[in-house]
Length: 334
Image (spheres, rainbow, N blue to C red):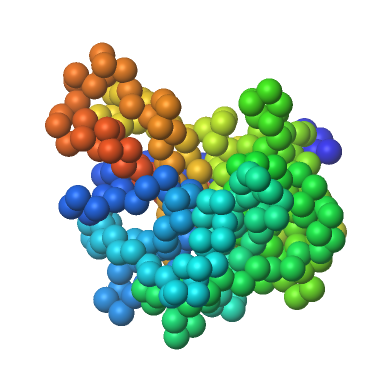
């Protein structure tokens, strides 16, 4: 458990500012993603455009390319017949977080289990792209990682509740459980499994109750033993630094302000479920529209323009971008 001295100073270690032009609707012309639960930065393409992979919990994957900071290009990634057949065997191709491993060039995705047998389908899968390139628009197959001990890996996931946070550094995978449900409500803590990349053995189980983290719906690795994540239910960004023995050394938490794109005076019920960072230390968060509450009240809707109304009614995701101020992430672990 952390003592008061172990907690970081937000102003020094996790101070961010919103980037002009964000948040934005995650849409290109009439095409948007659907129920986006994962985002990962893979680098720059041949035209020097920042390129991301997006994972939707309806079984779809897209490339997102960003030009001049605010111009979006969305293109679907297609599946081979074998990959389609594999996903068809699931009750639901419930994609959650997606992570690019910059050390191996591999991409991994967390798939959440659903009834009738959620534990059977819960897993972390390697995505095999055509030409072994994450820039390819074709996926050949999905390969499940054999994480051990399986009894521990599968102990906590349940129906529609799995590892919604996934990050990878040079030595470890970090798996963040969405949370624990009680009477259809999430409890005030969750857990992180740290898994060795070489042997796929669980090295550490971290419980988050003492850190004030209630849910984990997205993770990324900034440095070795250094992860940033999103707590959806508390609408907070968090950062954990780990010791050599993989216990937590420091934790930092930052509230996230949300508002409707182009209407900063109006908020809405956000469900931030994915987080990544580009090569300029910008943080990107994507909102997975919670259909029951996503559309604001009529009182707010009548103050919006026709484009915002249409996007809300079509449940278009919203993407956020934040820039770290002068005290950057890289200094916090020193």
